[in-house]
Amino acid sequence: MPKEMNSGAHECILLCWQCRDTCQDTLFNHNLARGGSHINADNIRIMTDCMEICQTAADFMRRNSHLSSVTCQACAEICEACADSCESMGKEHAAIQHCAEICRRCATSCREMSKMKQAA
Image (tube, rainbow, N blue to C red):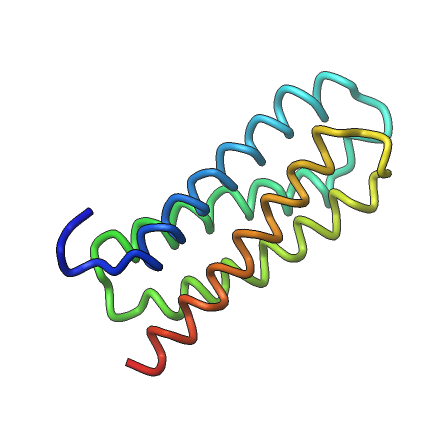
């Protein structure tokens, strides 16, 4: 961790990458593999959006961009939407519910990081 990066930013970056990886794994190795109702265009779009914004937010924070509060806020909103979408597929699928949980944790962390960056 670079010395100018605080531990909150480092944790948020790790959560963003975990969320990105979990969404990707869930989408390709669970949803697409199962087929049927798991193949929903809106769900695929939001999971893909979530993967991309998590990577972008992590990259912005990593380089200490002055615009990272904007990407973190967007990341929080998209992660919440992805969690809602995953939860709507049913509670009986552990992989999908795990994805929703990671998305919510990432959203919370990004929301806090956005507030911290805006206050700075």
